[in-house]
Length: 166
Image 1 (tube, helix red, strand yellow):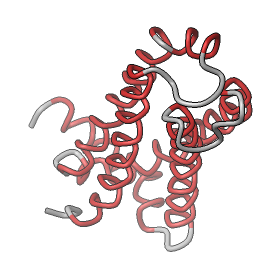
Image 2 (cartoon, one colour):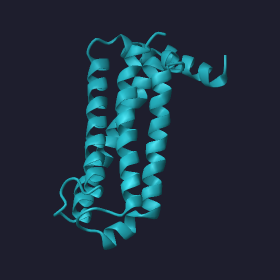
Image 3 (tube, one colour):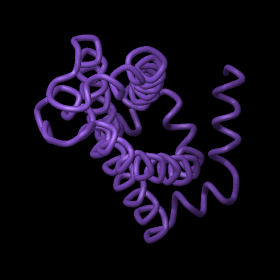
Image 4 (cartoon, helix red, strand yellow):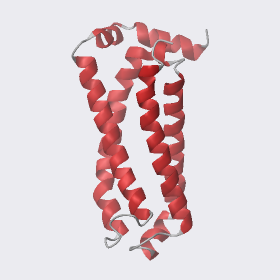
């Protein structure tokens, strides 16, 4: 057993994890909030992605769209982490080997890297020069990658249940 696998087993075996896992009310409630948080994140990010691609809100300044939605993205992210940690702990031993869970984590990391690269490369120039209409090609590439990655995160998250216990 690897040290990471051992850590997952220790988390799984704690009294709090067992109580959460066996709860017929608290676990589904936390899971529901987790799914809603991911929906909030994906919805706000996809809105910005579609705006960058010039597919929606072409008559609205990009800065207004991002300034309005970014706080909600961060609220969703905070809720996702706050609910995701106990959900993971409650099922850590099972999730360790779950290919859908691993895919979700990989896609989350790639989505974070994509966002970081977008903000470090084209975002500032995009806000300065392309407030209306369609953004330059590289910005559209980042936006398309973001939309694909977040779609994959949602699909992988739902597939966790399919691979649960295998």
